[in-house]
Structure formats: structure tokens, C-alpha cells
Image (cartoon, rainbow, N blue to C red; front, side, top):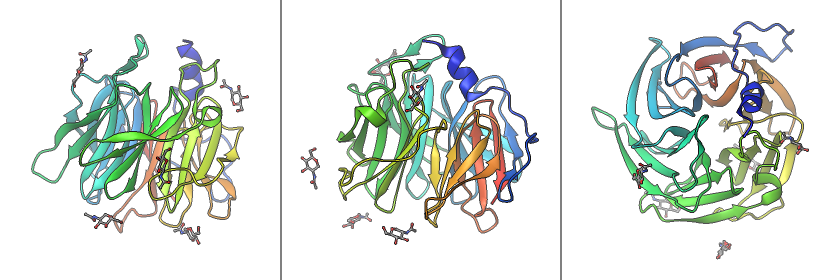
Amino acid sequence: MRFPTLLSLLSLTPSLGSTSPLSPRQVDSAQVYKFSGSPAWAEGIAARANGQLLVTFFDKGEIWGVNPSTKAASKLATFGNATCSAGIAEISPDVFAVVAGQFSFSGGNKVGSWGIWKVDLTGATATASLLNNVPEAGMFNGLTAFSNDTILIGDALKGAVYRMNVNTGEYSVAISDTATMAPPANAAIPMGIDGLRYANGTVWFTNVSKNTLHTVKVDATGNATSAIATVWSDMMADDLHVGPDGSAYIATGSNNKIQKVAPDGMVSAAATVSGSTAVTMGRTEADKNTLYIATSSGLIASAQL
Ligand SMILES: *[C@@H]1O[C@H](CO)[C@@H](O)[C@H](O)[C@H]1NC(C)=O
Ligand SMILES: *[C@@H]1O[C@H](CO)[C@@H](O)[C@H](O)[C@H]1NC(C)=O
Ligand SMILES: *[C@@H]1O[C@H](CO)[C@@H](O)[C@H](O)[C@H]1NC(C)=O
Ligand SMILES: *[C@@H]1O[C@H](CO)[C@@H](O)[C@H](O)[C@H]1NC(C)=O
Ligand SMILES: CC(=O)N[C@H]1CO[C@H](CO)[C@@H](O)[C@@H]1O
């Protein structure tokens, strides 16, 4: 596996200041926090209702909390023997589902090691518990809330979307599509479907090795009810977030920006940041128009919309 290729694709050298002229809607990002050492590669990000950010890591099976006001961070939980954590979504008030498994840049991916953990933040201290392992999965990465009892999870190696019941851990394949969800044969790391978000009847997903962003309409069970549409096929796309107005915000790694897809389909740059891996929006009155961005260099950044 050609890891250096992926490393250069995702860009390990963040720069806060933009060197290119900003379009009218594109704003510069500011540092919220910088992870350095281990963990370092922020891979997933979510906002709690109380304003705290939750961050997962491609190079560590841990979840950390970051306070954007005090700019302090602390470890909240460890996911058993996982070495990698990824997609995160809230499944009930202050309870989050997180992807975790065994991947490392030196050791590669361990097929069969992937599962979903529940992080419960409703008590005085965070607790993490295994919801279920999925031994058939090749490599989980993206995760999205779907209904009040179901999450969807992307299998980046096998090119499929699983549904999982968050109460029972029961799971099955909802959508499978080699062309858009599987990694290409020449991928640096064999990862296809990466970012995954459900909103308003539509599943949005990216293929990180094919530089594509797609949508597909689904029914109440998560089965596809339309052909898979391609929003773009010429820019690397990692994880994404769909805002309350239906606009999607997409992390684009070494393209050094967060791309916005408006409800009318118009694509524009929303913020400048190097090496973005994931993005979310604030949920408090004070930061509901703020994007929070995770990056492969450990920088957690913010940008005002
Ligand atoms: C990791 O932990 C799981 C249980 O959570 C266990 O099934 C698996 O064998 C462990 N793997 C390693 C490599 O220790
Ligand atoms: C979950 O959604 C289903 C169908 O939309 C509904 O019948 C059920 O009451 C909901 N459960 C909870 C706990 O909100
Ligand atoms: C979803 O698809 C599965 C098989 O792929 C099928 O068994 C199930 O009935 C479908 N659900 C609906 C609501 O069509
Ligand atoms: C949800 O989708 C419907 C039609 O599919 C659209 O009219 C509506 O504006 C969408 N709402 C949001 C919040 O995106
Ligand atoms: C390296 C790599 O995966 N490149 C792919 C990027 O996406 C285009 C369009 O889907 C493919 O043609 C490339 O092979």
C-alpha cells in the first residue's frame, strides 16, 4: 500500500492563512485546538448540544472532547483494543455512536476488527461500551444517524452501507454498489466510501479514492429508491455535514477548503483550511453559524459562515 501517496493527498502541512484570494463567500479558518504527538490525525467531529466538540482519530482508538470557548481538550474514552476511530453521530441526546477498529499506517487494515461503540455523555463521566462488532465488514469509516433507532455505516473496503439498530446491535447491508462505494484497484489505502450523512430522505456519501461525491434517495429502511447520482467527480472528498437548511459541507483534504453544496445544487467554497477530514456545525445559539473542522494534522479549526 502506498501510504505516502495518501499522506500527500490528505496533506500533512496545514497553514491557517490562505495564500489564494478568497471568493466572497469563502472565509478563512481559525485555530480552536491543535493535537500534536498522539493522537494526531483527527478523523471525525461532532458537536454536543452544550457546545463541546467530540473528536475521533484515524491514528488512535480514542474520543476526545474539545471546548471551543476555553480551547482545552481532554480524553473522554478509549475503544478497547481499537487503533483507529472514525465516523461519529448522535443517536439520542448526548449519546453518540462511533466507528472503531484496527488500522495503522505501519500495520495496515485488519479485516474483521471493525465495530460500533456507544459513548454516553449523559452522566458525570463519559462511558463507552461496545454496541456490536461486524466481523464481515472490511473497514468501517463513515457513520450517520438515520432514524431514532438506526444508524448507517459505510464499509470503505467492500463498498457497502450497513444499517444497525442502536438498541440491539442487529445489522444488515442496506446498499451495496461497487462502482461508487468500493475503492479503485490503485487506491493508496483501499478505501472507497468515506463520508456518509443522511438528511431528509437522501444519503450523501463520498468515495475518498475516486474524488467523488454522491447522493441516493432511500426509503424508511435505508434501502435505495433512486439511482446513485454524482454531484462531482473531480475533487477529493472526505467526511461531510448537512446543515439544517439542507446545505452540505464537505471536507476536501489537500484541496484546502470546505466545499458547500447548496440545496439548489450550486457548489462553492465555504472556508479555507488545509488537510480537512471532517466537518460539523455548532449547535448553540452562539455558534450555530460556525463550521468546526477536523484535519489530518490534528488542527481543529473553526470558520464563520
Ligand atoms: C479486540 O477486542 C475484541 C473484543 O472487543 C476481540 O474480539 C478481539 O479478539 C481483540 N483483538 C485483538 C487483536 O486483541
Ligand atoms: C421512533 O420512530 C418511530 C417511527 O417513526 C415511532 O413509532 C417511535 O415512537 C419512535 N420512538 C421514539 C423513542 O422516539
Ligand atoms: C429492503 O431490501 C431488502 C433486501 O435487499 C428487502 O428484504 C426488504 O424487504 C427491503 N425493504 C423494503 C421496505 O422494501
Ligand atoms: C427536504 O426535501 C424536500 C423535497 O424533497 C424539500 O422540499 C425540502 O426543502 C427539504 N428540506 C430541507 C430542510 O432540506
Ligand atoms: C487514485 C484514484 O483513485 N483516482 C481515481 C479518481 O477518480 C477518478 C474518477 O472516478 C478515477 O478515474 C481515478 O482512477
